Length: 77
Image (cartoon, rainbow, N blue to C red; front, side, top):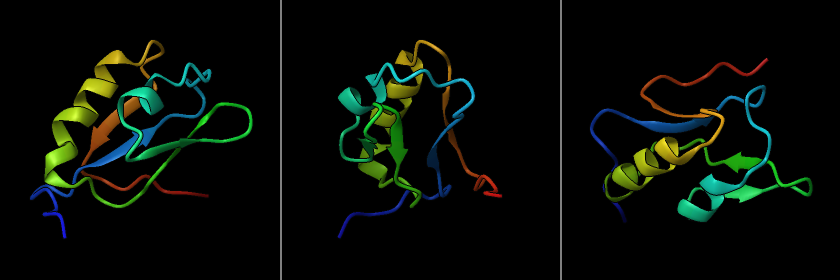
């Protein structure tokens, strides 16, 4: 079992900003899958501690700034 990060950090995507470049999937396939149109499906569980740095790299590499690592859970309506 992997250790959760102490801050409860999660990877989140802003689907309005995302245009489906899939760089997040290439850099973090452990947490990101793609739908049939190439848009990311992000696991909502807190990131394991060993993936926090990888998630931050994916955030930095997102060409549309659609990804973020956040301690808060986004509300789904």
